[in-house]
Every structure is written in C-alpha cells, then in structure tokens.
Image 1 (tube, rainbow, N blue to C red):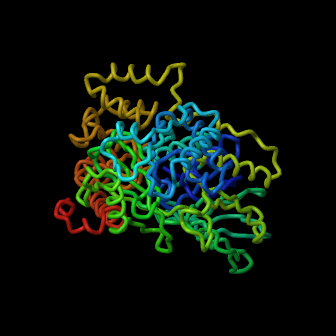
Image 2: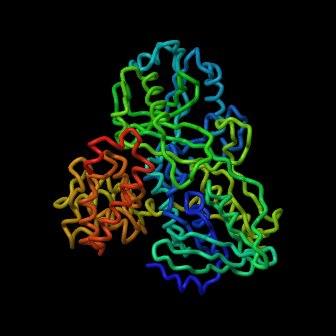
Image 3: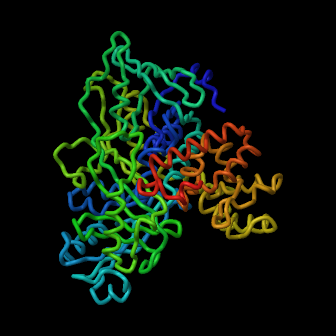
Length: 564
C-alpha cells in the first residue's frame, strides 16, 4: 500500500516520469547507485510502447543499411549482457532470411550484412552466421515460397517473449534498491522556479488524491514518457507565470502492428526475417510461446496515443505477406488470436520515410529551453534500455555536480536470476519439483520458473496453506490461480488488464482472455478482497480495453467473442 502523505514529506534526487522499459532501467540504475529516486507512471508499468514491440533483443540488422554502426554495436553488446542478467527471460533465437532475386536486398548484400553483424558482435556467445545455397535452403524449408529464391542466411539474435516482465523486474529491482515506484500516478504540472523544476503535482489515478513530489536542491528530472514526451514537456510551467516550455516538437513516432496466430504448416519453430512480396518491406515471423508472432508494420501516426489498434488493412497485409512466404499456411482472419499495436518513440524527422527514421536514442537537455534540470529521452529501443539507464544516471550525476558512482547494472542480475545460497537454478527447480510433486506437475513448475525465474518460489509458497491456488485457470494453460494473487499482492497489478495482459499472457492465448474472467474474478474475491461490484466493473473495463485496442474491428460482431 503506497503512502502518498509520506512521499510528500520527502525530497528526491532523481524524479523519473514514465514507467516503460527505459524509465524502469533508469530507476534501477539510479537506486543502485545511491540516489534517492522516485518513478511515476500514469498508467501501468510497460503499458505503452514497451508492451507493443516485436519482443526482440537484437542488434538491428537493418540499421546497417543506414550506417548506424554505433547503434548496432551498442545493441549487440547489450544483448550479451541481457543473456546473462535476465537469462530466464531473454533467450537466443535463430533467425532465417530467405533471399529472393526480385526483392530489394540481393544475396551479396545479405552476405555482407552477415559479416558486418558478426564483426560488431565479436564478443557474442551465440554461433556465427551461415549462408545457404538455394538447394540447401529448399532442403531445410520445403514449404517456403520458391519463386525467384536465390538462397538464404541464418544468424542468431535474442528474444524476450515476456517483454512486460522484463520491465517489471527492473521496476522490482529498483524498488528493492530503495526507489519509490508508482503506477497509475499522472503528473499534471512540473513547477519551475529560477529555471529549476522544484516540485511536481501528481494525481493518484486509483484514489483521485492529488499530491506533490518535491525535488531536492540539485535534483534532476528525467522524462522517459516515450511517445508522450512532448505532452510531459507541455506540463512544465514557470511558477511566476503560466508559460510552459517553448519547445519544438521532439517526438515523431510511427505505428507498428502485430498479429498472433497458432503454428501453421511449414514453420519449424524458428524465426524468419523476410521481405514482403508486395512492397519489399521487412517483417518478422517469430515463434512465440507455442504460437507465431507476425509483424510489424511501420506507418506514420498522428492519432490518439491512448487508443491504438491494428487496422483491418494492417491485419490483412500481415496475413497476405505471410501466405506469400509460406503458401501452405493459408492464414485467414479467422486464424488471428490477438492483435496489438503501438507507437515507436522515434525522433521527429519530418519528410523521412518511417523505416528510415533513426532508431538511436537522444538525451535532450532542456537547458537550451530554460529548464536546467530536465532531460528527456527521445527514442530508445527495448534492447538498449540498460545502457540508456546508465547514460541517463551519468548525466544526472554530472548535473548534480556529484562524484559519479559506477553503474552496477552491467553485472548485477535481475531479481528472477538471483538464486542465492550458491545453488543453480536447475537445482532450485529440482528441489521444488520434489517438494510440490503431490500438488503440481513438473511441467507446471517448469513453466512458472520460465516466467518468474527464481521468484517462482514465492508463488509456490502461497499454495500449501491454500491448495485451491494450485488449480489451473483453464485446461489448456499451465497458469495457476496463485499467479493472480501474486500479481495483485506482490506485483502492483491494479486491474484485469494488468493481470491478464502484463503480469501474465492470458489475454494473448485465445478468446482475448474473456472466457477466463469468471474464474479470475472468483480468485480476486476469495483471496484479494475484491468486492462483487469491483469485479463487475473490472470486467466491463477489461472488455472495453480489448475492444478498443486488441480485438480487430472485423471480429467485434463475431458471436464467439460476443458470448463472453
């Protein structure tokens, strides 16, 4: 339970606005380096761009075409760090590139790109690339489109299937290092006096209570609000006037949409990086939790950031282009299990094609706009969040004129990788399988460890006193009732979207999670103190969210969906 009155009595060295992956990374780094830190997120952690990515931890092979070599190197270095510090969440992923004679990237260009990619990842722990002749490629992938096929390439990158949990573990790590972290807390005003932000006026979105967060005398405010960066800047107001920061537009994000489908004929449980047959645009076909994640699109976006949805045209585009690569897939709209769409927090570069806008991040110092202690993050990738956090905290120390403490995040594992007692994670899993063998199957225990890492022990510990919590939420899933209780009591989940979409993946595995609502609300009433009225209201809000953001327009009148 957060104590807003206590927060009002404090003064903070570092105030972070935005609880996506970059804000979480900044908070963790700052707290570990001893700064009195608070993070404020207007919705839920990872509820914006961090939750809507392709879930890749990668160097960005395409960035080589735009000569963004430093970004590629930075990304590949960070990929290796995450393989170690978040080993339960970030895994190597084999990607295959089919090369066609009639597309924009010929065989020689892909080959050159592979050599460069290996060069920039000289310290990697995954195998180097290999090129495939047309004959070899056809032997390995018999179902793939053979029209004008020239051969192919294979290389390794990383995948974080549970991107929201990667963000959450950084939030938890920051909290355990002493940071205050608040979701559902909107910043309404940043008060400026003598060119310094002195305090922030905030509103608790859960209770409606308004409160202030005070900055210490040499505090720094970090704006990691992603696509909302400009909106936050608009709320910076000089105390002696009503004037806000007179700034040019900084953000110019593009919309990216994805679809999730079941496995289909021709796939072999590995990823594909392909060019669309119709327009040559690259996209991914990726294995994701026994399903396939397909995306992304890349469209200019000027709409409402609070409601972003994959259009029927985008869904059809991804289905058509996947069928063009795998003719036997025969995917139709009926095969789509889930869609999601978000806006990339890219810099405003008017006149450029969406795909050519730089993906490198920029730390914008607002000193040039009359505010000496505000830094905004423009851009930023899921892969490089840890380095962004390090750079931001370094910049904060410099502004504070304090001796810079070294970062710890490049070596310290995230909470799910902290086993303790000199044991390996394999030993812990084996011990839990023995301890709970009369209650849960080994398969379920393995699944919990794949999601929570070593913290799965905390969920298992809930069960002996309440055996009902060992019950599966549905026959088709390995998720159990204890996860719902843990999400609310230990992971700051406040509503059903938090629980089904970001603490678990229950929303994304069929029927948009709507069929699970009766079971989940019973758990919330029995074990979390939710009232009947609260559960009814939460169900209505959940369905409204799914209809507005995830259920395709063509499915909204579908009787199967309407029944839930």
